[in-house]
Image (cartoon, rainbow, N blue to C red):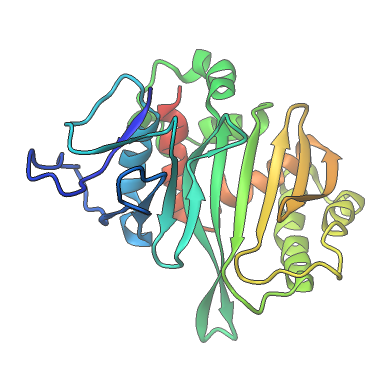
Length: 276
């Protein structure tokens, strides 16, 4: 059983030393019978996410016994400390968190605002099924920055979800629609040529004017089996489109060469490789 170790108040032994700087663990309801835990990860210390996820998901690896919470009876989340947004370590029972990041937007060229935090999830069994024959002999560090590896991740029929959690409290659905028209539109053109306006319109029309997006709203962009892109907002499905091109274009925003958040892209690459 996978477990996560946390330093409650035990005097010994000392916590394990991780190879890179990281923020402190934050434990929710850290009392007897605590049911949830949060791992705090700052934007500058995201390499710690790699260590945390490896600890959570590696059933064969155990850390020194200095307090523990099991995934079987607790919800373990990862906190993006700059925004205070937390992400579950697992979605839909089988998709594991691969990386978290921030989508920033420049305002009049004067300052950047945090629009939303995002987490990228992938089904590790399907990663093994589709990618292990080709890449299983390589270490995660050897696959870092390997464009073909990420292209294969985006091309193959691997269930993945991009979870967007709204940070900017004044974000309108029209702004989201406009942003996707630009970003997804450029990727559709990049991968499929210029004749994809109808596909783009089908996707962006899901973000209807009556939808409200207060801070904390959650958008899921999920690639399901058969290259079906399912879009939901706060748990309500708003559309479903079968298109390998659209799925790849969405994933490229967060995993591709020109990803919104370069640090998050590196974490996604490393963690996906570690699941092989």
